[in-house]
Length: 402
Image 1 (tube, rainbow, N blue to C red):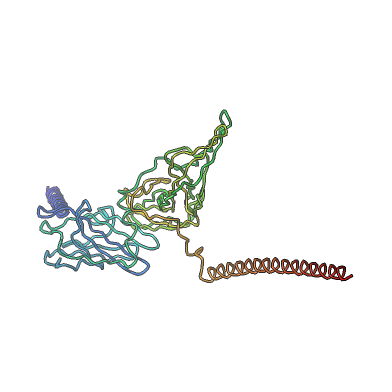
Image 2 (spheres, rainbow, N blue to C red; image 1 turned 180 degrees about the vertical axis):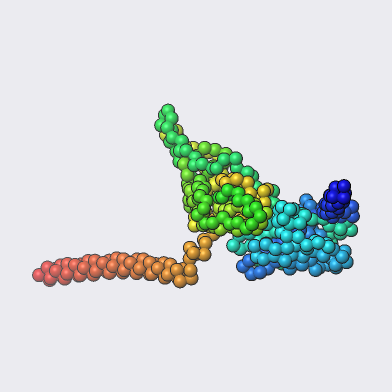
């Protein structure tokens, strides 16, 4: 009986402890839902820590460090700070408690945080409870924390401007042959209006780390092919429209991603891609006509505007081969830029300029020589004609004297 009573007491204490822990994790009645966003530029160590409402429509505060220390935020007596490395691995303090950065509450201690990182930047997003009294600081001019401009991974995380592709894009087939000798070609439109519309491809399967660390090694997943595609018509064929694009590209499989206990990790590739306007020129029974313009998408040469990145969490790791297309209006216009390895150097530019000057000099010399030769020939002919005329006059004078 004593043993049974002791077991009942222990069981009661365990249930009470669980209830208290559960109650501690529940949001208090004087709190509201919010987002904590940490962005780090790995190229220069710039950081920004932002507090938003859960819908990411109202910015409350921004700090240029891993600690929220601006605008008198400390008056809420609700400390918020990160202690993470450049990959976003570490701890976050929200109010009276500290947590591990993890999507799994079992490993984090009750919070849900998602992270992503590439070779140039990292992002951590945590769903948190905020003091109900916290209001947006409308009067404060929030600092601009990143010298290189807005970072890219937040837009990838938010994914509001992205469209999921149900199937991998495949090459369009050439359409030829019909009665009356239908033929034609796809050509650059009058105004190609090129814009950068990258496609994101999940390269690896989802890896569940479990209770220990894990890693996805380079070469352990396959490379995927990104093809050109067209929207609004079936083209006769592919055209580069005189842009720095190509019909297909391989994503490669050279990136490594490492995970912490409780993580779900996967490898993604942002593949640079350009959208531009083209037209189809038809030749039907000898009559030439062209269609209205439509959009063609082609991978950029040299993987320009592309990079690998690691994603963590079940909502970001979908399945191998998943593709997401950037269909937003904020993508940058223009021809794909040269990557650093293919960027023409000043020496190369000087060589080109020197060659152009030499060619122009040679052309000028040839033209000058031609003009000189024409003038010289004309003068010679004129001298011969004058001499002939003088000789004839002298002969005529001698005849008259006789």
